[in-house]
Image 1 (cartoon, one colour):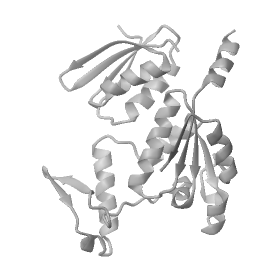
Image 2 (cartoon, chains in turn purple, red; image 1 turned 180 degrees about the vertical axis):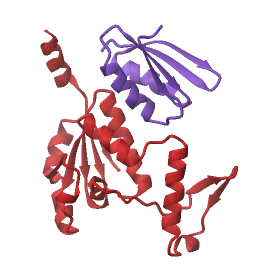
Image 3 (cartoon, rainbow over the protein chains, first blue to last red; image 1 turned 30 degrees about the vertical axis):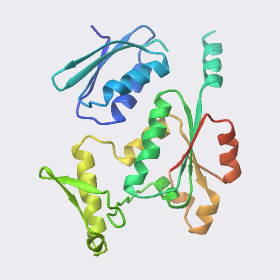
Length: 75
Length: 170
């Protein structure tokens, strides 16, 4: 289970990333954030975001119209 | 130690500048999307607003988009795409109508407004430099602009650009 969930469904680029960054800032290192998005571009974007910022993309799942990302705050 | 880490992180941060030269609704998006996203990815961002781009710093934004001279502009409508001949774009009121349509579309698709993106940029410490020469040229008033604006010129941008990894002109 994630420590926090961010519902970014219905939002388009770059809002899911901007809101995820804000939510991650509020988490302690090692804690996890679950992001729910309906933006098909978010798959590539969250991979790039995590690779660049050093946060760990623990999991990403595509269920129906919803993309679910589990990000562990490392950086 | 934590402080040392954060100081090191800061000095290792990548830097980017964006020169924003256009003040229409459509052209306002690329610079603000990239600036806010870069800031979210820990990049130190400076935006330099010049010519029509300087209007993007006004507190009160009245952004418009015109189909005139833009053959690629086609709005989705009832499963089709509607584009406008240039002649129609010239008719008074068409620019306002196209702007309202675009703003409705932006809302419907969950795309941020420019006001929201600019606010996000301010909150993530994106530096915003307004061009002093443009301000004088068009007799604009810094008092009409958001408080975070600093004024500067080409040399101010150069100083930022020379220490940046990415410099974009839009």
